[in-house]
Length: 168
Image (tube, rainbow, N blue to C red; front, side):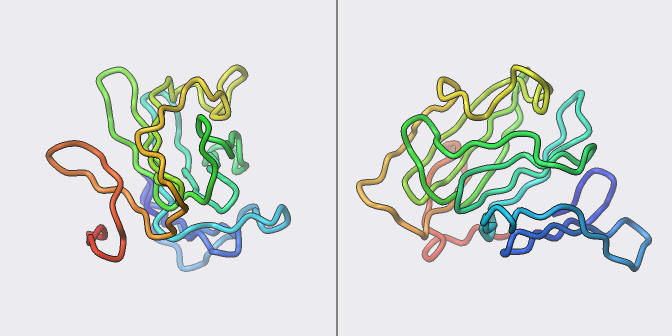
């Protein structure tokens, strides 16, 4: 994942996070989710920078979604239930809006999204775990580990990573 400062972030499946600053040859490590038993999901990581916020890594795991602050270098928010859906996060995407950005999450159980004031992320009163923020777009009848996000002319939809190419 590349952030706005051209720092490359490496997200290890085992829960470790590392970064390489522009111009450096030495990788640095910060924090780890492995002690809590969290494992990151391939394609479920994105850098997001709000209009008035320095930025987060949005990290999908087998336990839900986490916002890792690039300012404090710690997880500042997380969610394990999205409305009434739970499951492994398979993919994440942020679509910009005029006033608020929308976070889309593909779970192995379906598709959800939340549109909120992301500049308040990491502050008191902001919580991804507030279930009233999450809209369930698709609830699958059984869990599918091959779900992903597709953005096309019709908007964002749930796709299948085995039959639809999603990497640029």
